[in-house]
Image (cartoon, one colour):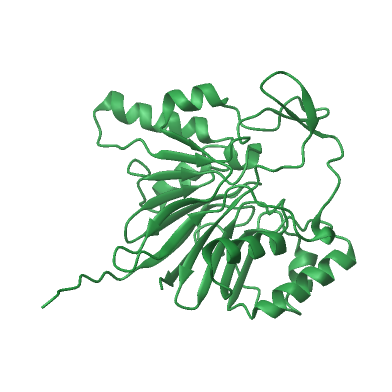
Length: 300
């Protein structure tokens, strides 16, 4: 008789950094984003925010960040990668003091650590360059999707970093403006933010998509996640939508796209304005999000 080993798969996401906090939860916020993601197999830090706030909030929540398996960066902007240096310091102190710790693998796009100019700022990208990051972490830079977890019985992908997201919907694409990216040979070119990526997790009700800023466009990200994961259903989306002051037509088309997904929840945060959130409530179930909230989904 053949025996089978089964394992319940699940995902929890705790917001460590966001622009807002929850009522009666005395954490701090900042214009940035950081999520702690836990599955049955792995512990993942998605973005670090701007300062060391993610560490302070995690400590207050009773969460240790010394045993991370992965750090995944959505893109290189300061409000998502700026506190990586604080994580290095945190782990360095643990080593000096003899405290148990693990150095996580860092997953990001190949362009994540390129300097990013936005005049008058000479660099609004990562404080740490790629060379120093390689000294501190096992580094996995890829413009292709990266598997983070998978079901050990059916070999079905549960969690993936999406890598470089091909642009699909014209209504989501904006001109780079003053943004430029500095290439390794010193040349610069307009920064179309091709390092912008996201995570996708397979649940029994469809995908959960986790975004940082959605510079690629939330509809574009969702379409690519469906393709990469081979799953058309989308149960929920959480993260920044990059809808700060969108044109009415973009907001309408975004809302119609999200409506047709029949989402169970949309947790729009960080770079999503109040007016955009209110507008999206006409299309899908927008729910509260802020520092301190923990969400949970069951795997497929």
